[in-house]
Image (tube, rainbow, N blue to C red; front, side):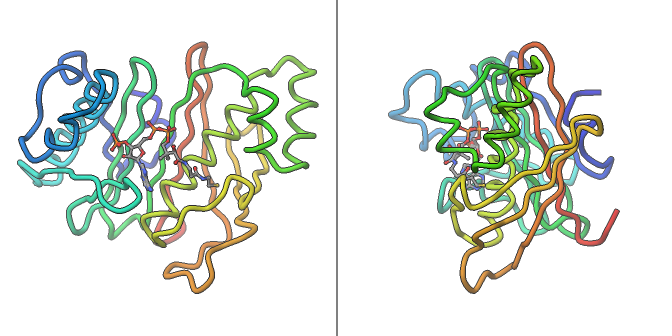
Length: 221
Ligand SMILES: CC(C)(COP(=O)(O)OP(=O)(O)OC[C@H]1O[C@@H](n2cnc3c(N)ncnc32)[C@H](O)[C@@H]1OP(=O)(O)O)[C@@H](O)C(=O)NCCC(=O)NCCS
């Protein structure tokens, strides 16, 4: 099982990019988006598209061209929700049927602390106090966990509302023992298409990466 499979319900299909996916060109319509991109961006885009194609084929969406839309959010086929993440040599895609899931967010980040400057941009005062406490106890990755969880929030929130929350518009409470988090949306968009007050997610940390995932279910699961 890959990490995101352990963080998401079984109805989600997760694909972690295989080595060949990073270098092999994708559909022409997709390649058009990376024509002038630097090598790093070409590699991650190809890895994410090949992974998405494999995941989509499980839902019988074959040969679907996964193009970026507004705000860079991928435009999934009707009836599918999903998310993409890539960092370093790791890329993953998770998708689910919209009947079961309103929104999916996954994110992976390098396991290293945020700089002090970034901590202030990403973390609310109460999150900063919690980070300081946890870092003193040796958990140097907790600031990156807050960053990753907020990226997962963004990947759920944006496609439903076409709105980019600021990092300080959400506040997290993290349960380290349960490997879970609760994100409260402090400043939602006015007249939200899908009002969201809070989102629950799960996380995992290994030597290399910090992973977070949110499955925003249609019904409690
Ligand atoms: C765009 C952004 C989410 C990328 O995050 P990242 O950690 O640097 O990169 P990741 O590899 O994990 O994710 C990139 C993928 O996110 C997806 N993504 C980008 N914008 C998105 C959006 N608006 N909605 C949903 N998914 C989006 C894309 O699939 C992208 O990969 P692709 O371009 O190859 O398709 C991030 O840079 C950003 O702009 N964040 C600001 C908003 C935010 O996070 N607010 C906090 C709210 S609490």
